[in-house]
Amino acid sequence: MQTLLNYGFEQIEWQVALLSFLLAFSLSSIIALVYERTFQGLSYSRGLVQSMVLGSIVSCLLMIAIGDNIARGIGIVGSLAIIRFRTNLRDPRDLIFLFASLGVGVACGVQSYETAVIGALVYSLVVIILYISPFGTRRKHDGLVRFQIPAGPEASSQVTKIMQNYTKKFVLVTMRNVAQGNVIDYAYQVKLSTPSANQVLIQQLEQINNIRGISYINQEATVEV
Figure 1: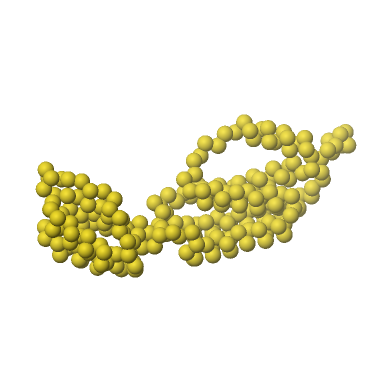
Figure 2: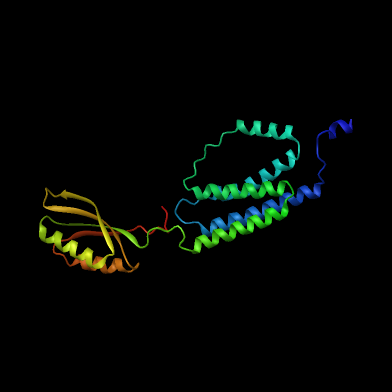
């Protein structure tokens, strides 16, 4: 009877299994902490951070349960196919962090502890380097300037002159008539040389007669909304 129960099952000591779970928990917690410290934007999710840790433990559990048995692997994959995950991730970076946590759990589940530790540390180090470096940043000190000026070539030429003198590059985004055509609403996307140059630009635009509704919206690439 005991032979029948043990048929096809790899014997794993409970100490090894416990070590695998604890290591998966520790390494995935490090990855989750790195994600929390390097997160940028407004759509922070506590559930996503906790899912990294829980997913690592589950993947470790599955790998221990499967072992070297192909039949069990096929059975578990078939049972997981029944479950449908409909959670939409807005940022591909979140998906990569989830995969990293699952990968650590898989490595711990197959008792490849060196791979799990080195992989988690290297991944976390790369994330920190990318966070503090400008890698992937295409725009710097970009902004959207909106204002309304009286219709006519005089005010429009003053705006063009100011844009040429106080921005590195500017592009007209929208222009529409308001107040029965007596006032024109402008929106310019500008590229500034320094972050503080937006104050100088606003001060110069305020000198135009009858200008109103001046607003500057920061579009710096390091801030994700």
